[in-house]
Length: 416
Ligand code: UDP
Image 1 (cartoon, rainbow, N blue to C red):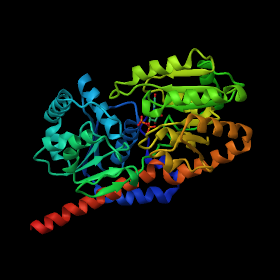
Image 2 (image 1 turned 120 degrees about the vertical axis):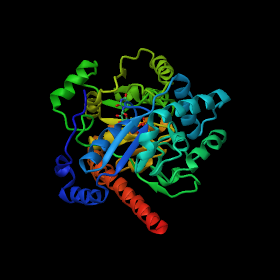
Image 3 (image 1 turned 45 degrees about the horizontal axis):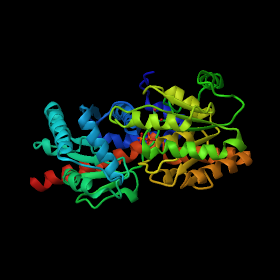
Image 4 (image 1 turned 90 degrees about the vertical axis):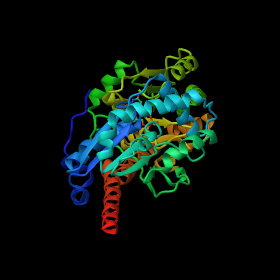
């Protein structure tokens, strides 16, 4: 189902009028600014999720914002997945044909987008896939920012060595948390991602719809539900989740939902899904749901139906699924990594774990202390309201853009 474009005014009930006034005030400095975001997929994954609300809101605030998606063939996305895995620390085999596929696809996209990108005031390039575009737009007039959404704190050296020169030439970069920053010769900013509380993915649903969704997928209304929503990606550790679930299954009678689909720029999904199905071994209490990219309401209903949300990643840029779970008032048991640490405050909004055994222990604990499930859920929701809603995210982007604009003015004065 397509997301309708909303007015920012609707958020007043969620965050209060002062927050919206501040956004309007900041945006007053950016009227008509040409801002382009570039990434590599329109659907699937957190970046697409964020851009789908950010562009309309920037436009509503008077900024001339647009979103471009680079196209690519299989070898390109295979290569960028290697980059992704390598930046997150995996040893990967980077061969000359990978580099060639990466550079060739970036050149083709640059030919298509060059005029537009060179004319923009600010360009946000998301993740490594389109990072080479900067050097292919030599007559750019605006500021270019590399927005890194992944945990590149301990990259596999050959991958970093190849990509670093591409990143270095940016005017600034943005990371989701301080631990992810790298030594780069330009200013670095920290901006945590966020969710849209009124999107189909996050809005309150009627109980009847939640129950219907559960029925549709054959979930047992009498058994507690543990859910992990994720692309089928090894860093999300779906096999670890199944293993941890098996450890508690006998004593807790719970059912496990692993819901996910692919992203256009993630070619490994099918293989991981096959491994997950194999590991589930036809257990009727493990529900592996392969969902289309626009199944936002379905995912929302599953999250709302859950007793506990799991996100047992072994590497995670931020983990919007954690934010989504917390916003629905659910405790989250998350891997002790990356942006999950910003959101899961151990013993308050959920538990951080380092192993399937740790996950099982925490699930058992929560099932034995039902009242804590509710109190953690309440704390989690308020924590997200304070820190991880789109209004805070927009404010930080606007502030950054105002700063960059001042930079233009200073340069003009210096040149005069
Ligand atoms: N998501 C989805 N369908 C799926 C899997 C994930 O809509 O099959 C959404 C999920 O609800 C979340 C985002 O994609 O909003 C995933 O973001 P996250 O930061 O958790 O992980 P990423 O995929 O970016 O690594």
